[in-house]
Length: 83
Image (tube, rainbow, N blue to C red):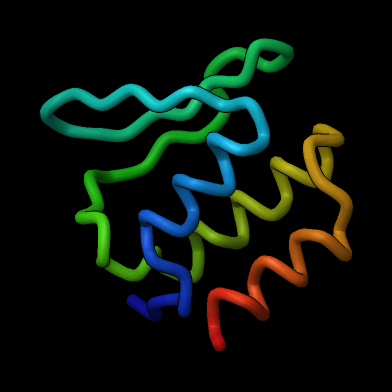
């Protein structure tokens, strides 16, 4: 599966900065936002592991469609992560 240039830790920091909270169990990671409830579920990633590209497409769509981030701000995040 194709990987993005974004590590899980970079994605985690973005989501926490946007007001999300993280929960993990033995099988998955979940992010919850007060206005949305649980809206992102992932397999377990290590902090320095690159997030797969398909997960990043889902993250982008969820954040933009739910008004948590502007498209241009998300694009800047992706550019910074790949630098």
